[in-house]
Image (tube, rainbow, N blue to C red; front, side):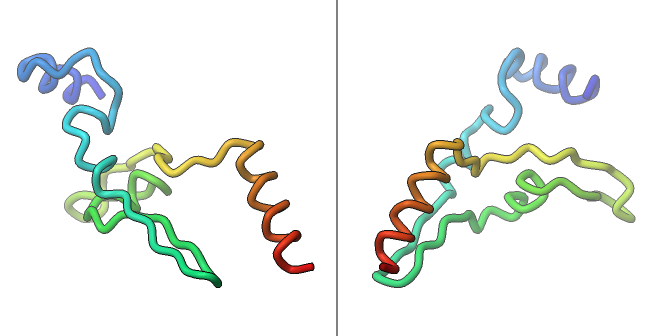
Length: 89
């Protein structure tokens, strides 16, 4: 983290929220839906590791913490469940 702060300070991007410096991940999020399904996601190469966390880098030696960017609030989850149940009745 210290290395990241130093680099971002030098480029004028500190302070700032992680994953929001250039906005590449946010603009890469797309949706696709039809009458039977809905998909949301990103084809950005680093999207998965940021959403779920994991090991990256040479020999997978760097641990990246999960930084979920596709979050649903409790009320959104309830609304999705309600709409799904209503549709299935």
